[in-house]
Every structure is written in structure tokens, then in C-alpha cells.
Length: 275
Image (tube, rainbow, N blue to C red; front, side, top):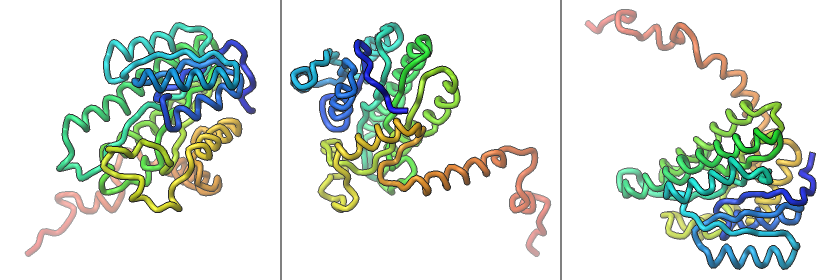
């Protein structure tokens, strides 16, 4: 069922100052939500808020926060937990880091994990508590196609986004029946400033692999309206359904009391020693 207009209800968008976050904000305002826009860049947030209000008449509040700073992150968490008008979290803030693991700056890797995993988790937990108490709402967690289509230079980034995928699938099961819907959005390469300084430039990606940010976000909403838990904008539904069915078949076999024969036959003592 499509999200309907919710006058007086608030959608929180992190990473809202540009790229997908800004388009998510625009689309949510079109659907009748007031907005709480979260990012570090005050000037860009205020410009976006003013443009949205002028175009749609929706209220757009700005909350300047660096989500890797505990005190600033806590301000956003508090709103998600306690503001009874909040009905949507677009958990979009994140960064990229590409390059051989052995040469990546460890502090940069730690900062990426802090943003893409730790802050992400705290915000989702706060939203689950706040929306769960209302018995209504939507959490959209932005992952990436690189959660599954890993590159040799994407170890840290892909690891963080694989976490988002597994986390969201588990959270969706946890919140089933509560009135809170959960979606993982897994875009491929999109034409945004995300790539700048990441170690992988947009110009290095073939044009045929890059989707416009508006098309990607519109696909996210189409998937949400269709009731999808996982939305991959460029992937035919039959392909994801097949993968999911295969995983559901295999999942019960991941835990058992005995090793599979190909392993048990090779255990010490079960094979002949070379002469």
C-alpha cells in the first residue's frame, strides 16, 4: 500500500544536504510529510529546507549534526525516540572508502565504520523504539549493491553495507506485526557527489552502470509502496526472488550437529597418512 499523505507527521532524513538524501526529502514532502533534515552542512540544509517549503508548503526543520560525534548523534536519537510526530526515518547518512585494504588509512576505515555501522545502528534502534511505541511508521535503511557485488577495493565499504542488509532483514522480522515497516534500499552506482574523495571516481564507472539519483530514489519509493523489504533498483524482481528463495532453502542447513561429509571425511584420523 502506498504511503499516504500524513499532515503534521515528520520524516527524518539523514545525509539530507545533497544526493539521495535531498531527493528523499523532496519526495517525502510531496507525500505530505513535514521534514527534519539532518547533515553537517548547515548552509546546504537551510537552502534545501527553504526550497522545499517554498515549493510544497511543508515545514522543513534543520538539525545540523555530525553523526560520528556522540553528543550530536544523541540529539538525533532523542528526537527519534521521543517525538511522537515522527513517522519515517530515512537512514541515509554514510560514506565511501575504496582502495586496497593494506594501504587504507586505519583511521579513515574506523571513521567509516563509525558512520556506516555504529551511528546507523543507533539511529535505527531509536526509530524502532519511537515508531514501535506509536504502532506506525517506516524505516528505510540505505545499503548498496556493493553489499553483495563486492569489488577487490571495497572490503571496508562492502562490509559495512552487508551489515546494513543483514541488519535490516533481521529488523524487519523483529518488527513484523507492529505496524512499523522496514526496507533495505540497495542502489548501484548513482550520479551523486558520494564518490568524491572516496578512492573511486564516478568518471571511472561506465555510464551504462550509473543511474540518476532521481530514478534510484523513485525506485526506492516504488519498492516501498509494493511492500518490498529489499529494493534493488536495477534488478528484475524475479532475480532477487530466486536468490532469496535459494537462501531460504539453504538457511536451515547452515547449522547442524555434524560437519558435511566433504569435511568430516578429511578430519585428522579419517584419512590415510602419506607413506
